[in-house]
Every structure is written in structure tokens, then in C-alpha cells.
Length: 211
Figure (cartoon, rainbow, N blue to C red):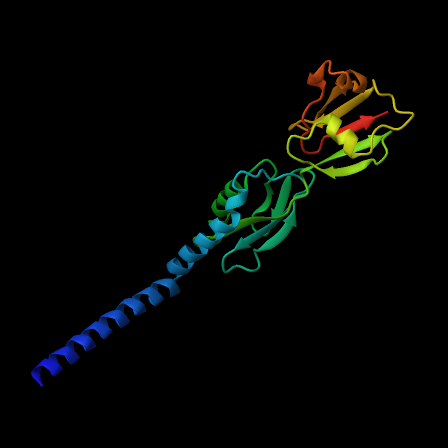
């Protein structure tokens, strides 16, 4: 009887210990800091693949402020590179990673929201594209592939038209300050394997002009 009673007491104490531990975990997860910690972990996993991605013009961003639905918006990046959010106003987004923009929004919102928790997710990538216009079979806007060159782009657009001036082709490239530069491309030289430095890798928002 004594042995049986001792075993029962030990089992009861063990059960109470497990219950106390479980209750502590639930309370920690239910507290604001616990929820924030869990949410931060999810957010980091969600945006991790885009840590090195640089936001560009026309990209669509989903901005979420934890427990502040009126401040959470889905916004496009305007041609001036900025987005507009309640309380924050205009803020530069183009040229920054989602992580950097997230930090800047947290700092800006700190004057209005106690410990703001912000997540920035690139919902649609529209900035990574180039244009080709003029005397090609299929002019238009195309997605920018990795290591895509001018010659690749012309081939992808169906090749030159019969009236194309192959020695007058150029790439119109926008600079960060808004100005542009022309990069000449002599089609026949590149095909012959000479002056291959003209066959540059394309960048986002480049425009290939084929007169």
C-alpha cells in the first residue's frame, strides 16, 4: 500500500510539472512579445528569398503593420521610385532591399505606433524587364533573364526586320539620376565575333532601339 501510494504521488507531481510547463509556453506565445516573436520568425522566412532583391519601379509591395490594418497597404512603386503610406507619407522604395525598407518604415512609424512590427513583401515583380522597339519581328517588353545580352534579346524578339539599320542599333540605359546613356551595338560586327564588348548584359529597364 505504501509503495502504491508513493507511486501515485510521484505520478501526480510529474503531471503537475508538465501542466505548468505547457501553461508557461501558452502564456508566452499569447503575450504581445511572444506573438511578435513568432510573427517575426514567419516574416523572416517569408521574405528570406528576397533579401538580396532590390526593389524597382513598378514592383508591387505588400506592406503589413502588425495589428494596424489601417496602415497595412498594397502599393505599387511609382515612376519616381517612391511609395505612399498613411502617417509615413512618401518614402523612397526603389533601390532598396525589402529588409532595408522594412527597417526604415519601422523607424518612421515609431512616432505613431508603439513598437511597430512591419513586414515588406514583394508581391509582384514588374521592374525586372527590358524593352525592344523598332525594326524587329516582335517588339515589346520582355522579362529580364539572367545574363541576357543584346544579341540574345534581338534573337528572342524574332530577329531584325528586313529594313533594320543593323549598324545603328543602340541600348538606351537609364542612370540612377534619371539621365540616360546610349550604348552602340553593331550587329554584324558581333555576329562576326569582333568587338564583342558591345554585346553588353542587359539591365532592368534597358531599351534596345533598332532603327
